[in-house]
Image 1: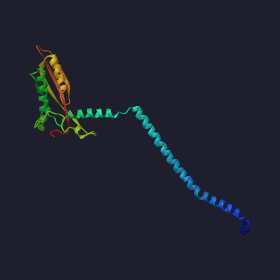
Image 2: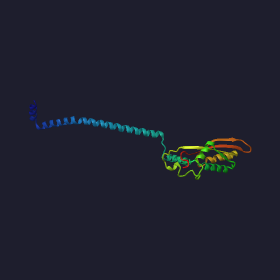
Image 3: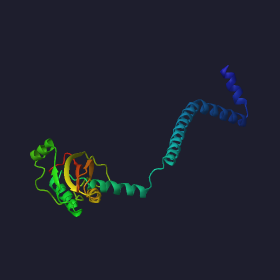
Image 4: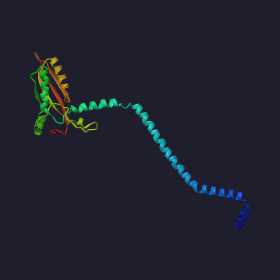
Amino acid sequence: MFKDLYLGFKALSPSLRFALYAIAFFLVCIIVFLPLYFTKIKELNSIQSQINEVENNLLEGKALEARCNLPTDDEKKIWWEVKDNLFRRIPPEKRLLQLVKDIAKVAEDCSIYDVSFSMPDAQANSIRRNRAVDNFPNSSMGTNDSPASQGNKTVDVKLDKFMIRTDFHCEYQELANFLKGINDLSRLIEVESLQIKRRLPLMEVEIAINAFYSKGREDA
């Protein structure tokens, strides 16, 4: 049978035999390369799917950015300035003596002269043990050891505070000036409590003030 097919093939014209060769070659190429083609198509579809997913995520990110109203460069600059100023108001140690001097100076400027200071007993004992009142530096809070001097990077600052009480006699206007004066101090403080007792001719005032400092950096 194969001999007959071969003789019949030889009997064909050259142009017809060439056409049959071409068809046979084409079929062989299909059989060999078709699985590779489908494999490549599958890979391309997978890549296209990943590209579409990334594009969708980018679109969602842009939509979220538009909804969140992210801060502008100017707003970020203002935020860093506020953060820097806050850190500069937090000394790396208690600086108790300097705080007392600053408060006394504010009282003197407000014509308040009978100022006395006190602290809770446990707190005073702790300060004496740690010698926190030795070698006090200048009253300026904006020194190079401030956490803000480390630049616009995240700084792990653990804050602690201690309380100091001050007592004096004054009139209402003098008290108002005193409260404004301690609020304008270069150090970060807060008024814990304010007690006023009306006496003649002046009222009796007791103020408890919390002063903040960087915990763990005392006596630095």
